Image (cartoon, rainbow, N blue to C red; front, side):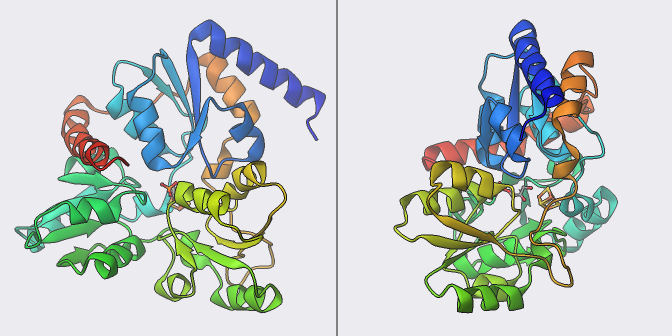
Length: 317
Ligand code: 13P
Ligand code: SF4
């Protein structure tokens, strides 16, 4: 239920968006109320594409810092706002520039493909960026004999390696949400709901990927539930996506997978959930906190992101 206070913030956000020519871009892991006030909701690839092509003066990013940084890199002339600077990412944090430089030096002659869930500094050290929507296709777009270094997510890296059979060395990073899904809970859920289909994000560990009926990025999982004729889905990604799934197909059932060793019913990204309607209101009002990326890093990080966008466009992704 929306309280009177929340209603006030939402109407003020709408007013300020029009007054300041601002748009709100939100990731599927945001809470439902935020997804509902966003001008655009999407996965990491779609959000980058939207950030690169819009006529707003201000982009308010309802997501985490690496996403807002990517928006700033793609739209350096715009003001990019992030309502809480603490909205980081455990996966991006698992890859620090100094160690990453050493890893690249220790594995010479490899094309560095980096998942978008990384800091601007790490992107600046990369050849091509990818998202979970296009990682397999980006690797497949390279010549067969090209050696690859993939970072920072070891699970997505392994998924891509298994799919493509390419020569890939992988950085040992993980996401605290996708690493923690309980395989035991999934198996029990499937016993209780034998017709349910198991949907898995490629950031999940191999045993969870092995029981999946379908593996894909957040938008791919959402599209699967839209097109599939099934009625029930066991969802192994951050539970925010279920908001859109319910909106698209309210008559279907969506069961969130809980983390291991936990009594809570679903898995949430603590960083994503730092963003609230009140913080969006404050942020738009004060035009702060604002994202800044060092000029040199921005220029270097932009190249591999643009390369990803060009390959994606060519492939119709
Ligand atoms: P996608 O929405 O691109 O699948 O990414 C998932 C994720 O973990 C974002 O942090
Ligand atoms: Fe990072 Fe994982 Fe949160 Fe995505 S879900 S923002 S990868 S910590």
